[in-house]
Length: 193
Image 1: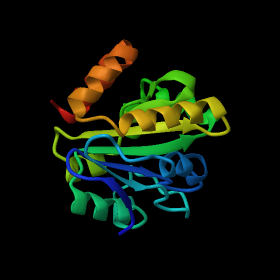
Image 2: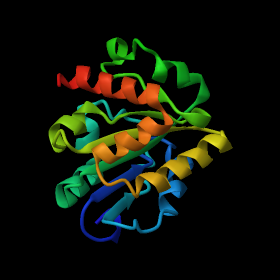
Image 3: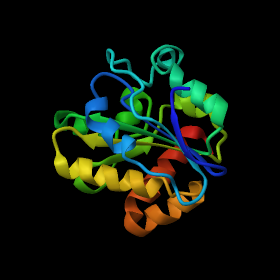
Image 4: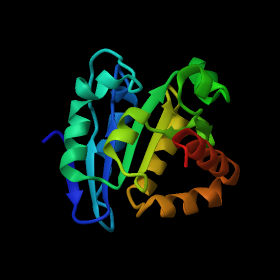
């Protein structure tokens, strides 16, 4: 078992960090410090891989380095799945580029506060391992930015209490109405809904 489980019952949430390269240095402690949710359960994989960087957009990632994620998903069947990544400031424009879907095949991330970015997880895992009603998100924390890490920590604590996709969208709309509309629109276009 590659994950730590706290709480019990539904909803089942799976939070993962340190998916590739040295991202674990920026995200693992955020996940390690999470406590049991008030309702349901939370499984945590703070470090998936400390090895080389292989993109989660590549299908073989989840068959090799990301295998612990797939094993946890198959065992737990989470309705909420969240990846915590980190990025260098120089890559921010690339990640939030409106043309990203045409350049890399995935929608752009949306900018939240303190340079934290919000987007979908790789379509490789989203399409193959989760039903459409599941909530699957990716948060990007900016490296070497204490404000970004602090805000990412707050988001992780809030997300561990999230009950469903609808609950998350409702909360996100209150704080980020424009970004929420964009994320939903991008998601629907991308997945043909």
